[in-house]
Amino acid sequence: MKEEYTVGAPMPRSIGLCADLYSEVRELRLAMQKHTDAVKERETEIREYIINNLSKSDDTGAAGKRYRAQIVRKVVPSVTDWTKLWDYVKKTGRFDLLQKRVSDTAVKDSWETGNEIPGVDRFHAVEVSITKL
Image (tube, rainbow, N blue to C red; front, top):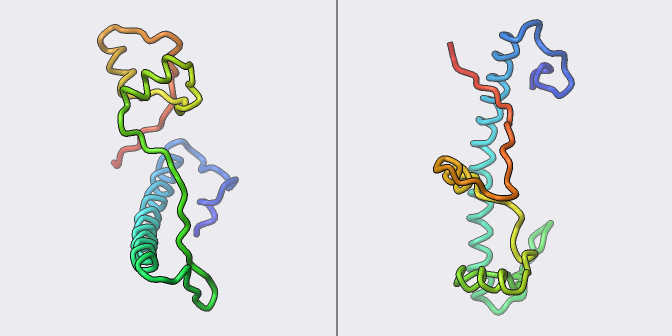
């Protein structure tokens, strides 16, 4: 990898050259992400294969030369009726059951129709837009 791609490397002499470097680094990351995504797909395929085949056998696990695989079962929540859950949260005040994040899209839609949402402020994030010349 080029030294100029390393964190802490000196920045180019001008903002224009920074834009070029930014685009190069971003393209490299996206290309690497494609490879990472493909590896993740293969990982998922192998995981599903192990689950499907090991759970059909009487074995509790299987060992290779370096690793052992076994099926581990755990209970995870799955909401089947959101209305009932929301009613329960409102009634009991158990907001800890929910993750603390608003939907960007829903909030922006409300703002566009002139509806402010109590407790939600506008934060002006700064982004960089790079376009090819």
